[in-house]
Image (cartoon, rainbow, N blue to C red; front, side, top):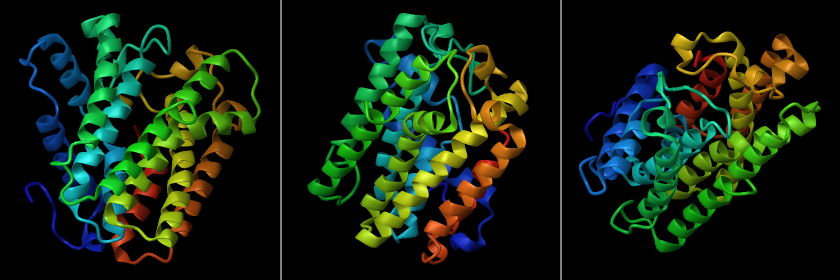
Length: 307
């Protein structure tokens, strides 16, 4: 397949692996989103602006790597992985709105509402969310995935994105501004707001790849610990990563009076907690063979990244 490095996973350097999978995801996203000239053009231009802007593509890559870990087919999982990225991007657009975090930059570019206005930004997020489920339910996409598995994928992603997942976490995050939280409360917010979609990304890849119950349990635990490691590191990067590297406004958590791991634990203890979470993620998939090597390397990349 075009853009894929076909060496065995344990022979590929992680940057090469990430670059290869990012290229495939970007290619598929470009195909799956309506052309910006399609009627009505403004919404499609805004969708493409936000979605094709770049980013780590961590969530869809996790779906791919999870499927690969159990011998799944790459081309089969790609449209499902792209649907996850659409939902993630919708959440970022809404997060950046003045009524939420009021951010001016995302992925190194002006945020959607800065370019297209708040009304179109809201509709762009709505459109990406809706389009994601259109992709998930189209039988011509995803090879020979059977209807029952497709339904499980749709249910998993809807649950992770809804009030018991990402949206619920965002509500708690908004309500917690200017409040003093303990580490348990903060962990709940992050488990829902960020962790739920990361865990779902791993589970969806496992479902598409045909994971057995024991494999599914291990990958679910991996996703849960990885989500924690990712969010702690995100909190640290908000303080330490310069804007020109992160592509986001620095110290936005402080500006918005948000509780974070560094604010409660301090930087040193937060980095230790992130490392412990990454170690637990890797331990969860210890029985897997070399095909899970990408997941192991991503776990440690998550806590060493600079954006």
